[in-house]
Image (cartoon, rainbow, N blue to C red; front, side):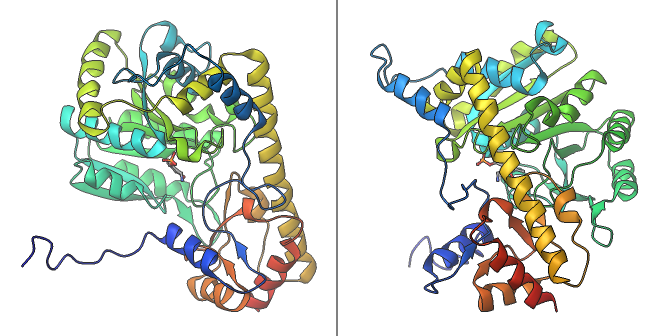
Amino acid sequence: MSFFDGIPVAPPIEVFHKNKLYLDEQAPVKVNLTIGAYRTNDGKPWVLPVVHDAEVQLANDATLNHEYLPVLGHEGFRAAATALVLGENSPAISEGRAFGVQCLSGTGALRAGAEFLHHVLGLSVVYVSKPTWGNHKLVFTRGGFTSVRDYTFWDAENRCVAIEKLIADLEEAPEKAVIILHGCAHNPTGMDPTKEQWKKIAEVVKRKNLFTFFDIAYQGFASGDPDADAWAVRYFVEQGLEMVVSQSFAKNFGLYNERVGNLTVVVNDKSVIAGFQSQMSLVIRANWSNPPAHGARVVHLVLSDPKRRNEWMESIKAMSDRIKTMRAALREKLEALGTPGSWNHITQQIGMFSFTGLNEDQVNHLISKHKVFLLSDGRINICGLNTNNIEYVAQAIDETVR
Ligand code: PMP
């Protein structure tokens, strides 16, 4: 007899499971389009040169130590992260209506945000886009939300944002429902609302008194321009909407395992910030007590020094340009092969992922016959493509859909 008898075995987390299947695969030719991490044209992980440079400086800085950071994190990092998403000249910042809290990457920011909204504000209903990133529902359920619902996002037939249905679903949402919006580079579809569509979304969120939760995990990585990628967040702020914004520095700094994230709150009246701060301290205290310093120090060093910041901008541009080149190449090759179906969505989508439109049978065939690994919903990580394997992948897709 054990307390642990009869624990049901939970299904594997698909993205990690598929990544492992790829790693274990013995075939000489195989392609990994699963996990969302950047790869160079040689298929290698990339430490951004400016990140390496900042790490060298930190390693040589004898004044630093490994004392605890404050519960709410590294002050310089929090301010830099908040300014990155809201804009250097954001009135919300100058008026003291914005406040950042360092969290454990984007996931930790989502979790801390969820717990705050549930335990402190008493909110229990959350809407996520259909489809959405595989972790949103779990984070909010474990964060205390008792009703996790979907709003329509994707028009599979036309491979675009289903804006009419999206708005209709938000119209039906109860007052004070939390609406999770992907700030840019929607995961998994790679398709963002246009500015006109964002305006419609903001209008209904405001009129129906819904609560905005932006999740921005790809700022700068999507278009190469961090300001352009934060347009939607800043537009909502301009409209006077209160919100929380979870930020991840995994992709745009390549700091995946350092778990560098931030949760920014924007409120209408700065007098509530003291309460927010104190309650958020308890949320963090009960989770990780205080965050790790290394990644936050790196991001702070880079963002607060104009020269380093420029180097970072060059690196995010290089990453997003390589992704755009691979998108164009994949589309071109499929079109040249006369692969049945239309492939223009591959270049219309942005960010790391493409929602190919391949169905589950086709995905399974790609894996078993061609050893091209991707998620069962047809999502591919474009970063897994390079000039050495793109022809092979295009041929494999072509053979599969015929
Ligand atoms: N939100 C979305 C939409 C994501 O795609 C990701 C990364 N896959 C995250 C949040 C957070 O990731 P991390 O915790 O690694 O920052």
